[in-house]
Length: 84
Image (cartoon, rainbow, N blue to C red; front, side, top):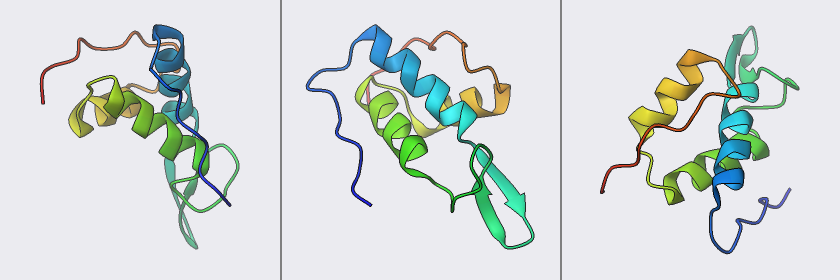
């Protein structure tokens, strides 16, 4: 399957949708390996990859995204972005 297209520029609303995508579609260990917690497709699923790319464009680092996933709140506010 093809990747979900990124928005031409990332708005606050896009970033909040991306937070929801990475939290809801977080990895889950299963007997057959790591799957998407939402739909049991192989992880990372398309929505998780899209959310990660959008948040990276918004200036979040891998550690920031991992912290959002660990928190587990799909409505969590974005941490302040830091320069790369």
